[in-house]
Length: 425
Ligand code: ASP
Image (cartoon, rainbow, N blue to C red; front, side, top):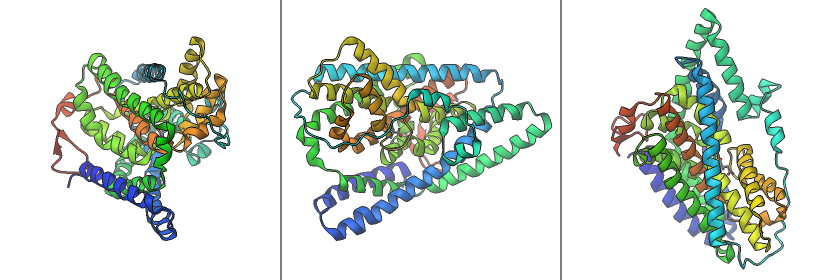
């Protein structure tokens, strides 16, 4: 069976099994052996396996990608366009989120309760800037500091290009290493349906559906609505009018990565799958996506920005605080920065929300109110986060002549990347 269909089926079955088990979550046997036993271990294995690949994959593919740029001067252009588009899409996401929150007022009538939330420390933006340059490369690798690894990889690749014969030998080595790393991705993806099943089953079994209906429903629904609108309208319009690409073809090709993002709630863990989809189904050349996608997974989080925008207004409304136009502008700026600083792993978007709340003078304890339902929103926003990275990559690639339109328009989607008979689009 085609693997993306298989992942989808396992995801739905996981949701059903999880919902049933939620009724029995008080039962020690079910809790210990299923929810926090088999499902917990299976899900963690899958996420760990994907994360394990993150550092080697990002480093090796950036080195190969930059080295394969026919004209190294293109790198400057590529980075400017990519970073510019990432910022624009995030700002658009926030404008949409804030407008919807102003129209629908999800926090109106929300009873205030003591949430018992204990604030964790969020990273100030100035530290994000200071930490761009690693002072210790080994530490950057060990702690998976993505921006630092990206910067070191680019420097390394530029040095290879300036090193003549010695550089050529190293480049050949990296090209071979790249093949090997991708072979590991293929092996791990064979287990994706089971991993996704465990992750979803555990989430649904742990998740307290009651809290959703106790006033938080409108917040939840509005975030999901904004995420869907942003993906379907903003990305489609950009793909169509800026990139001249058919958006339907795009979403069909990205489907396997979106499901993986939904299952793992982590753009970083999904990166191997995003890269494969963008290469095999969207047709973006490695020289472009090897740079744009790891960067996007690290700094471009439109879905996270949407949650932060709506959450801030929701909390303000719940506390009866009217926000001025200047404060709304401040939310756009700080939430853009907060989403840049958000690490591409589950739940960090909510921690970074503290910075936005502080900026507009709202109490950070209010985060406790939305904490209970954040996991499900995290899954959805991560799928949007990776779609944004892929859409920008496709548009930038098109403008640089780095996309193979035959692959883009090819009516087959590769979801099992070794599948000899891919499914028809
Ligand atoms: N889980 C998100 C991601 O990895 C980040 C977040 O919003 O918490 O893209």
